[in-house]
Structures are given as structure tokens and as C-alpha cells.
Length: 585
Image: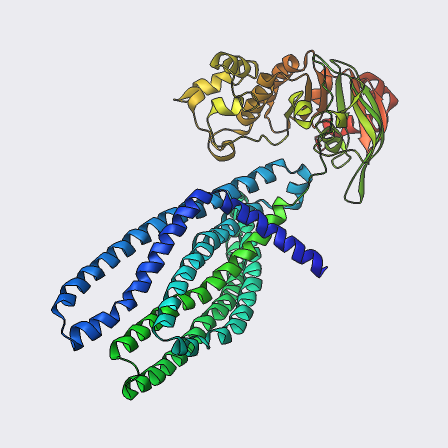
């Protein structure tokens, strides 16, 4: 297991650094500016010797003119190099994060429906926002900053060894002593950060649920309860964050103390040499200045280690998603589906979700242009059956055929192009009415959009908005009534003009007046299409040539409306329940 983890760890970092290498030109320019910075920073303590020995002690008038000009030039180069390296490193860091966010979003969009049922929306949002932001800090600040500081350390180390190599060895001997505790503290930071990110993801999910369901919270008077739940989650987050603060706070004092030990030794050793006459004050102060400047980037590296460890925690959480595999795969050599109405056949289909059996031995043959109604109590398997047609899930056993072709032999995108769906819960986006109707056909003309809206009996209420089709309907279509939302969804299905139609309780959220209008639109929509109707209200069954009753994942009876009523079986009981006021079928 350890070997596997190490291999996974290495692979993840190779993929991350591959993104960095993709910006190699800008990274190279940044490194050139870093070298200039390191050279300019190293030149500053190097100039201390001529200032002390030539100007203050030897009183050399020429050096009094040359040295200030040299210092101005050094700081000019330093400032320009700082700007260049910050700009190009910023570009590299932000571009890497942009690519990572895009890859993460693309991967999530490509994952199957089962993934979204297992994950919470707020958690997925946290992966793209919080986790990637932590990686951004690691890439933009830590990794690139460590390169800059490393160049500076190399330059300053060269200065102190040039001035006095024996003293340099003594000054640097304390640095390895700091590595072990810093590495240990960094690992603790990483563990705590992983826990912190998990709690933040849970907090995001909580916020998403309570904000989206705010009407229910208020209706049941649960504001105080939700406030206390939120406070409990923030307390847990606070405790984890303080553990990280404690671990990170220890590294700086440790480096300060060890740096102080090194400086004290330099003062004692270098001062002894000046007093003995084997070194000049200028050499000592030049050496001392370089050592003091050297400890600065070394201390930064200890802080950068904490940032890197936090970033690695984010990398693990992001790549946990990127490395997910989908069980809904395209075939190696996809088969094309012919155009026109299709025959759909279920051959002894079984389906289970996790280990729970959902459908058992479903055998059906629905001819081109036929309308099949599916009825049964909630939880019987009706929605699961129609979800198998667009391969939201794959069958566990058996096969589903379109015109004799196994749907698993067809490219998923081609298969879904043949299908239009209208669900019980109208799903709309925070965009214009035009964009929502044309969602499956973005190149549609306004004339085609208008025709679909008219056919769905939505055109009249659209005209009442000041911006008409250009009206933004708000989050989840918040500016529309339930019936209006459903008619926009039906217009969307009409515009797509797919030969296979799935109506999953499509009229259940409509009032009586809206349902009457939409039933007419559905009659036009279903004509000539192979249609599966999951009927919540049995009034929608009037269009169906055949009715299938499903109980506990099995077909218990099928026939016409009149035949099933006469049989006085399951369908007859559902029909009686409907007219007694119970629509939960």
C-alpha cells in the first residue's frame, strides 16, 4: 500500500509540474530575472567592504563618487528584476490554476449521474474553489518563490565563501539542524489542512442546502436550529485552523533562534579575527551583511514549506476527482444510429444500484412512434427504467436495443442526440428565456424558438416580459411560476426535435389550467416519436397505445387503458386511488 501511495504521489506531482512546464518560455524569463535579482542582492553586501575600508577608513575620494553610483545601479537592476520575475511568475501560477480548474470542471461534467448522486454539490464546488486556490498559493508563491530564494541563497553563499570560507562553513553549519523539525511540522500542516478542506467542503454543502431551501427553513421556523448547526461547523473549522496556525507558527521562531545562533558565532569568530589583525573591518561587515541577508531567504523557505504542504493537501483532493473513472464509456468503434423514429427493445434487463436490485427481468418492445405509459407506485423503478435509455446508467444484465443495435455500441453523444427529456422538476439556468429554450440547439433561429414556445403554449406569457425572449429568468428560473417553468422545458424539448421522447411526470407540477394547455402541446410533441411517459396523473395516459404497470422493479401487467381497467388488477387500483384524490402513482 505504501508503494502504491508513493507511486500515486509521484504521478500527481508529475502531472502538476507538466502544467508548469507548459509555460516554459515565461518560466525561463522569470528565472533570468531571478538570476538578476540574486546577483543584485548579492552585490549589496559585497559593496560594504569598499564603503568601510576605502571610504571611511582610507578616505578615498574617487571611491566616494564611484560607490554611490554603483549602489544606485544595483538597486535599479534589483527593482526591474523584481518586477519582471513577479509578472512572469504570476502569469505561470495563474495559468496553471486556470488549466487545473478547467480540467476539474471538465472531468466533473463528464462523470456519470451516479457520481453526482454520491457527491454533494457544495463539496464539488469546494474542490474547484477552495482546493484549487490552495494549490494556486503553492504554485504562485511557494514553488516559484523557492526558486527565487534558492538563486539568492546561492549568490549570497558565494559572497560569504569569497570573503572568508572558514567563517562561511561555521555560519552555515546550523542550517541542517533546522531541516528535521521543519519537515515534521510541514507534514503536520498537511494533515491538518486536509481535514480543514473537508470541513470547508461540508460547510459549502450546508450553505448550498440552506440557502436553496430557505423557504422551507422559514416556513417551519427553523432559523435558530440552522444557525446553531452552522455555528457548530464553524467551531470545528476554527479548531482545525488553529492546529494549522500552531504548527506553522513554530517554524519561524525555530529558524529565528538558529539564525541568531549563527549570527552570534559569526560576530564572535569574525570579531576575533579583526582584533587579531588577520581581517579588516570592511571584510567583516561585508561578510556579516551577506550572512544576515542569507538567513532571510532561508527563513522564507521554512515558511514556504508550510505553504507547499497545504498545497499538497489540495492537490490530493483535486486529483481524487481527476482520477475518477466513468463506467459509462464509448465503444472503441461506435455504430451509427439511422435517422427517423426508432424501435426500442428491452431484452431481459436487470439493473441494480450499488447492491440494491432496482429492475428485474424487464422485457419490452416499443415500436417506432409508439407511446408507452409507465405507471406504478413511487419507488417502483419507472424512472430507473427510462434513465437506462440515454445511458445515465448501464444495465447490470440484459440489453437495450435501438433498431436492433445495442445502445452500448453507440457513442454516448450520438445516443443522447436522439433523445429529448422533460422531467418532473423543471431544470432551468440563470440565463435568458431564449438561451433556455435553445439549450439543446444553441444555433436555433429566433423564428424556430418562437415556434417551439408557441407549440408549448409559452409564447403568451413570454410576451408579457419587457425583454421578451431576452428576459433573464434568474437562478433555477426563479422569476417564473411552476407551470411557466415546465412549459419552457417542453419548448426546449420541442426545439431539439429528437425522435425519442421521455416524459418523466412532466405535468405533475402544473395547475389544472396549465396542464390543459400543455397536454395539447404534448400531443403535438409526441406525434411520430417513440415516447415513454411516466404518468403521475393518470389523465396523461390518454395518448398512450399501451400501459405498463411496474411494481418493485417488475412488469406486473400491460395492455390498453380499457384492458387493464377490465382486468381489475394493479392498474385498476391505481386508477381508483387517482380519482379518490391520491396522485402518488
